[in-house]
Length: 67
Image 1 (cartoon, rainbow, N blue to C red):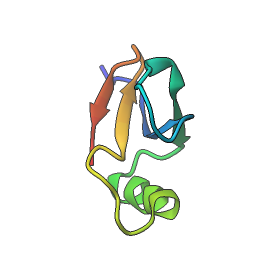
Image 2 (tube, rainbow, N blue to C red; image 1 turned 45 degrees about the vertical axis):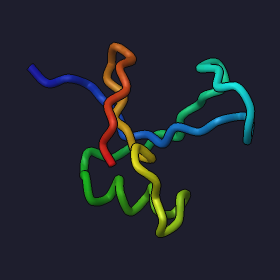
Image 3 (cartoon, one colour; image 1 turned 30 degrees about the vertical axis):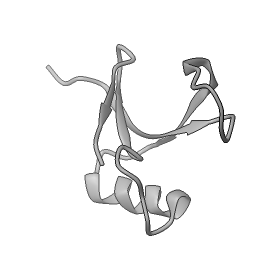
C-alpha cells in the first residue's frame, strides 16, 4: 500500500515574533522525484536552504522533515 504524500516548503506569514502554527502555510510540489523536489525548493529558498526547509506532508497531515 502506497501512502499519498507531497513535498512542501513550510512558510510563515510573519517575519518575527511568537510562533503560532496557524501562521504556517505550505508551498507544495507536484513531483515524486527527490532530486526534482530539491531543485524546485532551491528556486524558492536559494542556494542556502535551511534545515527542514523541505518537508513531506502525508495524507494524514503529518509533516516529516526531508531536507
